[in-house]
Length: 218
Image (spheres, rainbow, N blue to C red):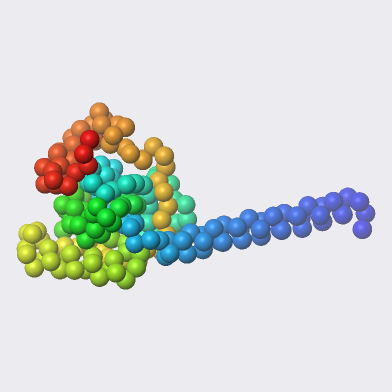
């Protein structure tokens, strides 16, 4: 084998090995992410109720809610972008990962607030936001959260809190992808924008009145 063909052969082998290693890292990254999600502590909730800007703005007001991270969950697309999720073809929903202090607020109370923060009776829709990415969904991380979620839905249904049936999905969490940085803490950083003024602000004002005794003290 002459020198020229040796070089070509080496480049081909290197390319194959590099591709294999890269794909292996990607696959392992996905698997690690899923495993980590399944091993989360019980003080984490993953909730989707339409636009994550709206859910974030309201639930972060509650005393005991320490951290809010907007993101995507429930679909098959690896590392989705906002533009991809907006097509409705990734299977992902816009969700918020909520880290809370169980000494200040329980998972059950957080779910009741969640059902106040959006309309759980509209299928794949919140107002003018339409698509599977805006579905109402609770991603539970253990059996205890699953049971609590079903109990809350049963209670709200039996008390006829809503005129129409609750369509909120209750599903096990498989993976969570944080959204792009500009989506985080969106309302507080962009409160002057039209969507914030005309869509989020009215919801937020109503939510604050409903939970005035459970809000963070400024």
